[in-house]
Length: 129
Image (tube, rainbow, N blue to C red; front, side, top):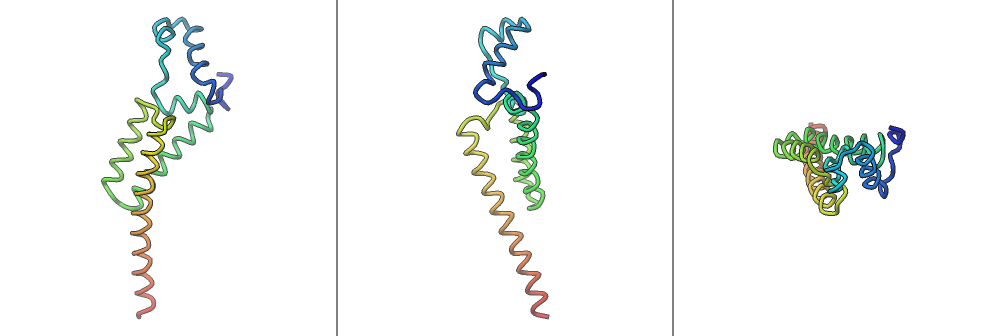
């Protein structure tokens, strides 16, 4: 609880978690040294409240783009990504970062393309009247 505002740091996160297992007499978890397997808890442990709200903001921005584009496929991907982060911490590995960045860029490009087409249609209506 003493490290909650700023976390313990990314290099000490796993060691601190194992030490907590030892302190609380959780023998099975201490023996096998399990990680959190939860993106939100992992960022809360390593980076404190700032990390937790950062990962919530990152996932929320996916949802914002999906709602702006009004695309059900994007929204379902956002829901899938949000829920899968409860069972694994994807954003600490390269494949998770690359996967989310790839889909984020596709969603953003699609949304920007649609928004630009709407802007051009509005300009045509104003100029051609």
